[in-house]
Length: 226
Image 1 (spheres, rainbow, N blue to C red):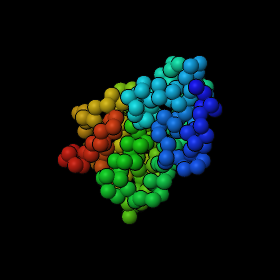
Image 2 (cartoon, helix red, strand yellow; image 1 turned 60 degrees about the horizontal axis):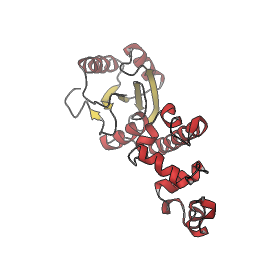
Image 3 (cartoon, helix red, strand yellow; image 1 turned 45 degrees about the vertical axis):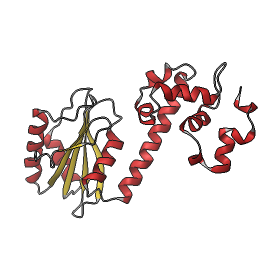
Image 4 (cartoon, rainbow, N blue to C red; image 1 turned 45 degrees about the horizontal axis):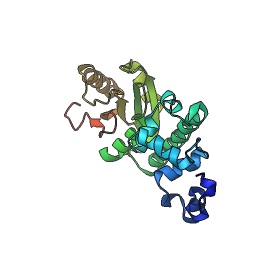
């Protein structure tokens, strides 16, 4: 049965208008986005199928590639592109809100921000959170973008960026798309080299985080690796 044949009080769009988005299930919200279903399935049925494909997890749906989304019956390339765009807009909005509201001075706040920014990236990204003397965020900057397994990081460029932002301190981070947060020997050596290079220009390296999947990002400082 098409949603248009449902009682008005049960239709997702009308329920959202009457009660707000928080009153709707994940499937109902996704159905409003999809607008129409496929033969034999309403938009809500199709939304449930999409969510079931990812074990009901919105975070897994958000991480899915365009190719994976487009391969789902009833989605296709156009809806897949729209879905990716909507998730990216939501991520950017939340990322900006967190950066403006918080000083990112505690490991918990930094972990939340970095996981939001890096966990869904399909390739390795090395970034810096440049901070002032009060640990307020000056700039979140992606310095290097690599492949699925590695990123080339140049200490001279990191120091140059620190001076350009007039930073007093920095928190470094990179992701492991493999989902394994364990630091490699190369990660540890790079961190020490960056710490020493930044110290020459009076910029403190407060921490280096590895983001991997949904696990809490690993802190080099907490592991005694700084």
